[in-house]
Image (cartoon, rainbow, N blue to C red; front, side, top):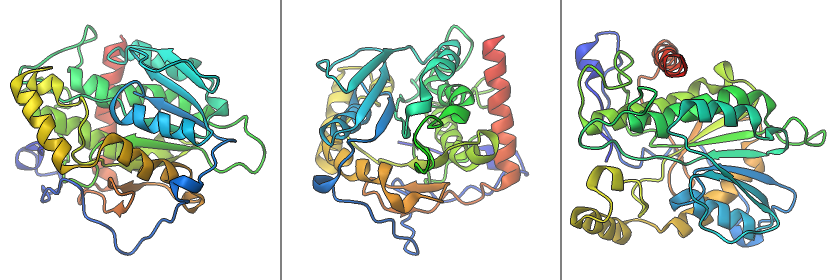
Length: 316
């Protein structure tokens, strides 16, 4: 349910709008092997899951716990039983001030992997947070940038010598042809729900591409789950509405379950095959996919600068 903005049509400097593919295009030139989930031992690992109280984040957190990892979950409502290796941090990440605070205060030095999965879809009518940010933009993308500004340089720095480079995995829809609109990332000049959501999709892909230079420390990777039955469409369709129930029923029939997705993705988060790499994108089968065409360095820099300006405005 992602649609490109009209940036290419309105701005000759924008890349030509590529064709959209929901799950991206598999990169056949690259194979990233990983230990099968049934043989995976994560007893020495620490995973941070932002958005781990529901949907895909919750499934990933539970799968990592079952494999022995220590897991820290950030979210609004804790839905699981307390456990010795599970820590819950309550936060409302529609607030950029809260995101900045978390980025500065979380004990990131011990984390091996930070996994960002919190997200919604833009509503049919524009919604704005108290800080003046379109709600989907705030929750699904800008909060991640805000957290990483305080988190990235500290991530994994207290682990033993010789530990792999820490990793950041950003959930979104990379490789689907969304280029966003750097002239209107906050959907203030015009508003269409799919175009607003496309701004967050594009931002998350460009966060992966720009991360090593703008937020140095970890390696960055993008995740495209495709259609999976979660709560992400409730903000657009209406929680519990007939349309929402029908849509989720169809998605449940056509796509993998959150649990199946977690079984495929958790081994990828920790595989040795990613050491020394950054900027790769993956589909819901943990296969590498090609990034969106046209996101060259100049365009990515322009979009990230617009994102940082919006964040500063929200914090004023």
